[in-house]
Length: 358
Image (tube, rainbow, N blue to C red; front, side, top):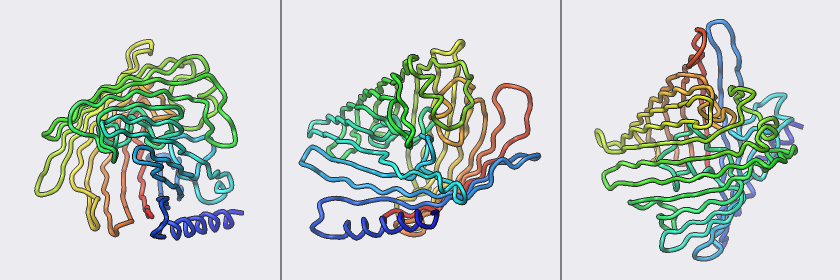
């Protein structure tokens, strides 16, 4: 059964890639295949030692001058919203291949952008946000509903000046064959400004309604590090990024701060990141260092970055390398301790990625 699934994925990738190369085909086919090793341990225990894979296959079509249609299928662990990585071995039999993105994107020539369907996180996607920070939401978490933005080109690039975005996200979508059927939802907005000298700043607010949230939280998997009785979240998020050149290569500094104003006492999360280099071109490389500090109730632990959770403080150096035009290799080493509570051993999470895009 496992071999049959792998063969089916590989055959699908070959067929879609063949269609994409046809000159008269107006549909753009894309996807990626990736492998990841990750460990998770401290001086006393080994919590995780896995080889994982992911496969994503999608298509987009420019319906007319203003509308783009987008579909993407992802491999998915059962009910896990924060990623498409699946563990190889026996658990490969529990993998689903789901329609994880399906939306229409309407863009005008005067800067309006309207998206409806199941789309990328509008708070971290490059066309919306100021960077790639996943302090509040993992980039893989799908939003189901609609988003309205202003001040970008028809190609999706964010122009200099003010940027406004608002969204409605229904939390009743399906992550697998098990439906999430509740009245839970979130609404949010973002006001940002892109300066001409490399600085971008953003202030956003996301509110989760309490009614229906417990049912939603009970059926999804992820880092369950929030208190069991906490269902109130209003996340105020400030993000600032500055980018310039150093020794002929791009360098950036990113700062991210979040506060849950609905917690019994205000809970905070902070993330800072420094990166140097670029992996846009072949043989490009990038070095980086990240610092993270998140209190227990600062964010929704099952929806933020899949290797973070809450109630932690940690550092993560990383290295990216692009040996071929369509291949990316990168390594991260996340070292964490708890933010509040009795002392515990430092935990280490090494990850090595190999990803091929087509």
